[in-house]
Image (cartoon, rainbow, N blue to C red; front, side, top):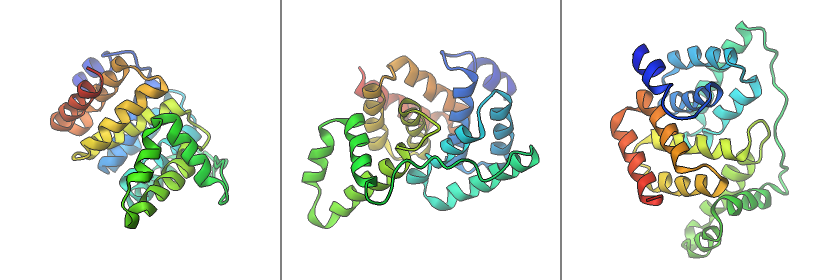
Length: 217
């Protein structure tokens, strides 16, 4: 395990240690492998990630894995922070209010995905349009607009999260295109998915790579 993860995997591609630890944190959160997660929270702090960056990576998982799993992870992170005398709560990174979260979220969606968002909203069945509203206001308004991590990093982490879920290839393809649109190239995406391999296994890794190759031939 040590030879594969910290030898072969860590020396593949051009990610730095901070990026690798953020990716590891979100995959472990998605899989709810919490004992290993605590070790990587410590590792993330050791390589220079801030408590805010760590928390924001975990929060980014919430729209994709749900609140219960996210809260499970936050409890583990808080235990590590307390053991290392990191004062809680951390500085609030919220940058929207109730009256603008939808508009700001929609603006981020369009920035990432372009004209397809308007088509999705128009084509949604009448009894499902509320889901499109939730997507804009909650997923992108409440989370993507937050401070602590930039847009390219959030979109890269989201690709790791949906790849780790398994069975979400439609969303994987969408976020491959989203990553390209915000400036993450194919080689970076291959490296990121390769880094996920020891934590999510070959089937989900190969499925995610197939999505990358389909969207970016």
